[in-house]
Length: 246
Ligand SMILES: NC(=O)c1ccc[n+]([C@@H]2O[C@H](COP(=O)([O-])OP(=O)(O)OC[C@H]3O[C@@H](n4cnc5c(N)ncnc54)[C@H](OP(=O)(O)O)[C@@H]3O)[C@@H](O)[C@H]2O)c1
Image 1 (tube, protein in one colour):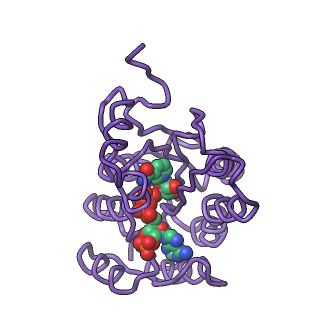
Image 2 (cartoon, helix red, strand yellow; image 1 turned 60 degrees about the vertical axis):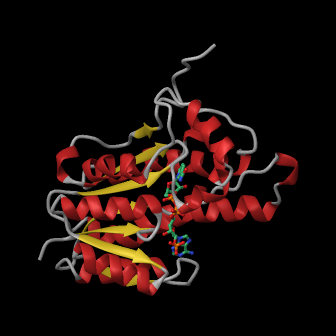
């Protein structure tokens, strides 16, 4: 039985597009989400195995990893951790609870997902792969982004630390998107004028779509990227590096 790639956040924008792309590329997929109906429908459609669990629940990562390994002869081929927050507030209004929640969901859960899968990833013949998510707001400073910038900055540090520590058995890479049309960004994009204004700030003048991320997730999670590790790659329409006006 082929080992599976565990996809956390598989009922979200980027997670779902990634799970679909991985399955379409012929890779084994194990989807994880907290909404039973949505998880079952996706798993059914793409031929994936699944775990339904709320990640706030004690033992959630262990459960998902054990179930994914059981579907793949005791090994796990990789982890895609597509769970996160967008909590944008002026620094004076951010509370310790905001910082702690953002750090927990984005950074600590990412490392816990890797820790839980590690005993099974090291058994995967040919090496396993981890794909984490940062944000454009680490490479480029934006107002209101203190908490998420801190939490995702930690993910970039984690990416390089784990890539060194787990080589050569497990590769670890990270994708840093700019604003992408997903449920997570819905509140920000609720105002069409603001959405258009943000889109226009990109050298490629539009917002991201989940399908912009999925091909890179597939490359990084799959065996074709066997010599890529410890990298943070922007999928951001040029937002972190290019200025086309002024
Ligand atoms: N969208 C952007 O503009 C953007 C920009 C930069 C970085 N990113 C990063 O990209 C990654 C994917 O984001 P996205 O935009 O695809 O987000 P999304 O659409 O909100 O998807 C996030 C997923 O995480 C799941 N999730 C959240 N809390 C959970 C919990 N307690 N237990 C189980 N599952 C939980 C959600 O479940 P439900 O489906 O049940 O809600 C959802 O499936 C994140 O790391 C995010 O920070 C996104």
